[in-house]
Amino acid sequence: MKDFLINNPKVVFKENLTHSILSQSNSYNFHTSKNYYNKTSLLELKSLSKEIGVKSISIKDESNRFGLNSFKVLGSTFAIDKILDNQPKIDTFCTATDGNHGKGLAWAAQNINKKVIVYVPKDTTLERIKEIEKYNANVYQLNLNYEDTCVYAFQESKKNNWCLVQDASWDNYEEIPALIMSGYLTHFKEIECFTNNMTKSKYDIIFLQCGVGSWAASCIWYYMQEFKNNRPKIVLIEPDEACGVYESFANGKRCSPRTTFNTIMAGLNCGIPSKSAWKIIQQGCDAVLKISDTDTKKAIKKLYYPKGGDPKIVSGESGAAGLAGLLKVINNKELYELKSYLNLNKDSKILLFNTEGDTDENSFKKIISN
Image (cartoon, rainbow, N blue to C red; front, side, top):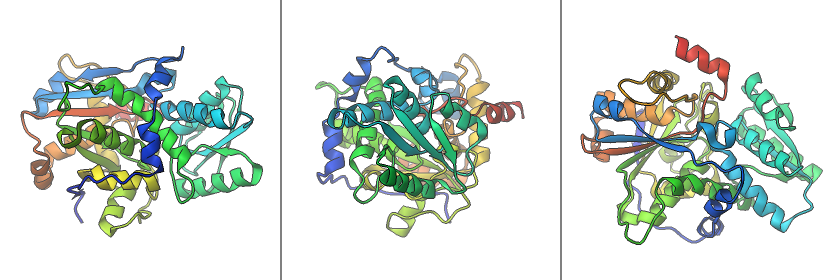
């Protein structure tokens, strides 16, 4: 089976709850009004662009977002604020996480003196657990994969009357995931906020790492809404051992991947795609590409040991996946069909995201030292 799938999307958005919430999002105004707000850097990788033969590579570095080493807190802060507008007496929030979402939720809840219960899957490292516990969260590790941990968190929240703040949606649970997706819109607006005199994005192709799909879908939605037919091509990058979106496309329906879930890309080590995210991905994703742990390790080193005058970037295993996907398309002759479809050439302007820093410092040090 190929490592990639081409989607050829037909953009026809049908109005639903998720689209309505995204359309009404004021997350940019919300975040920029807070004293903790910082605008993360958009860096240019000029030497790498020349090395691989494209016009430009820009990378949005989320490794210092609110001091939390990941973009995920954009979703949890905004969602919690909106939830409490309607239900101010909520005392305890709950979630399932592989690390970054749980840490962001714990930080956001601590800031407003709320309790947080966090469930993590069996492969979550001790360092990631300790990072969540720093913010007074009660963390419980289960002998389950990520998808089943989400089910467990849902059941426990219902039983104990906690508010579940999950970044994946399913039947009858779509509003809060949509609020989280709305929070993510902030950093897309930081990159290029649409104005009436703009007709085209600054970028030709965006490579997006994809786990459960909510963040990737929020990016797709933003660029489709703002630039319509002039939007960039968007490629989703998944671990080859946790490729829920890839297998959902291959099977013609949303499904859990039949994989080992054995990957160092913890933030992307997910199962079935989020229901509402999947609908947007179907309508606006141009292609899906699978990468290996070896691919992302090479990308981590590329960012940490730059050539020429490029900035040094600390990128975690999931954070470097977008670059890993770009490098794979450039260097792998078997991906010629995908490269041609994307029109990836010397004039291409590429956008990437470093979605996390060294969120597992021990793992990061091991990768850059080998």
